[in-house]
Length: 419
Length: 146
Image 1 (cartoon, chains in turn brown, orange):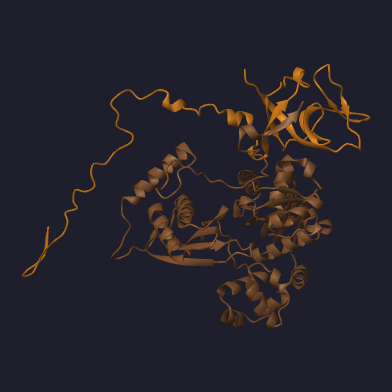
Image 2 (cartoon, chains in turn red, cyan; image 1 turned 180 degrees about the vertical axis):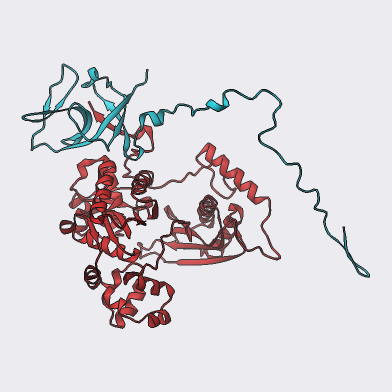
C-alpha cells in the first residue's frame, strides 16, 4: 500500500501554529519579494482571493476582507516541514519527500494493518506535535493514493481527513468522480487531447487500450494508467535530486542599464551553482531569462530567454556565471525597463558519473577553488566571497514587509509567553 | 617497459609496479602501552539529548513576567516545550488564552480547569467556555542565565 500525506494550506498553517489568533481567520502568504499570493487558508479561498494574485492589485480587497497577509518565511516553513517528514518516518521507513508539504509513503509488510486507523494516527500525531493539519490518502498504488488524498481533502466531514481505497468498488467510484484534468501527472495540454477523445474522468482514461496510450502518448502515461488500475507501476522515488535548479527573482526597482542586469544575473547564477554543488551535480545547460514589468502595460514590454549549451558539464560558479552574463548581454535591449531575471540550470548529471568530452574539459583548478569558496562562505556567512561582477555591497535584499518571526531557527525570535 | 617498436615510433607502457605506496595499518602495531581508557570510551554529555526528548515536537519560548516566580520561572528565562506530552494535572503548560501566550500550572478541579500562578500577587484564572483557550505545549525544562 502507498499513502500520500499532504499538509493543508501548509504556509498558512505554519503561521497559525505560532499565532493561534489566526485560527479561523483568512490568511494569505506572498511569494519571495512580496510579489503574489502563493498560499491561502480555506477562509481566504472562500472569500475569492485567487492563487497567484499580484498583491499590489489585491491589496484593497485584502484590507476590505481583513485577510492577514505574510511575506514567505522559508526558514520557518522548512523547519516545520522537516519535523513533519521525520514524524512520517516513524510510521514507515520508506518515505519519499515529494515537496515541502507532501510525501509519499510505502508500506511493505503491513497487510494486517487497519489503514484507516493507521492514517488517523499519522494525522493526529502530526497535528499534536507540530500543529500542522494534514490529509492522508491510502491506496494500492501511488497514483491512487493521490486520488484518495483528493477525496480526503474534498470531503473533510465524511472522511475526517483520511481516505483509503481498498476495494474495487471504491477505486472505480473514485476514478469516476475525478476529472481528467485533476489526475496527477496529466497536464493541461494532455487533458485537452484526452477530452477530445471523450475522456472526461480518470475512469475513462483507464478504459483506453494500453497500446493506444503507448502509441499516442508515452511510457509515462502508460505507467500512470496501470497505476490507476491498481497495478503498482510508479516506484517510490527516494532519491530526490532535482532535475533543474532555478533562481528567478523580481528586482526591487526596474533596471534599464546593462550593468545592473549583469550583476543580478551573475548573482542568480552563483546561487544556482552553489545549489548544484550542494547536491553534487553538474549541469549541461543554462537558461537565462529577462523580462520587463508585465503589470505595467503602458511601458514597452520585452520578455526573452536564451539557452546556453555547454561542451562539458560543470558546477563551477565561474563558468556558469560568465556564460549566463554573456547570454544576458546578447538579449539585452536598451530602452526596456527590466523587472525580472532568472537563471535556470538544466541537464543535470551526478558529479561521479558523467561523460567526459574528448577535446574540452573544465579547468582543473575550478573544483578545489569552488570547494574553498563554499567552505569560507559557510564559515563566515553572508557570502563574504563573491565574484568581481557581483555587487559587493548588496546582500540579498528581498522585499519582506510582512515577515513573521523565525520562531524555530533563531533564538532571539522565539515566541514570548506572558507570565 | 618497452611495448612496441616500429620504424619511427617507440611505444612504452608506464611502470605501475610501485604505485601503490606503503600500506598503512591503523591498528595492531603500537609501540607504547595501549590506553587503558579505550575500552571504557563513552559519548561526551550533550545538553540537547538531556533537555530535548522529542525533537520533532520541541519548541522554545521566552518568559515575560513574574507570575510563576515561585515555580522557578523568571522573567527572560528560556522554556523548553514538548508538544507531544499529554496535559495533566499539576503540569506547567504554555497556553494560548484570549489572544496571547501564557504559562501557568494546570489544575483540574470539580468545577473545571484552572490556571494557577506561582506568585501570591497573582490570581488563579478559571477557564470558562467564553475563553478562547488552547493548551499549546507542556513545559519540560527552564533554562536561566545567571
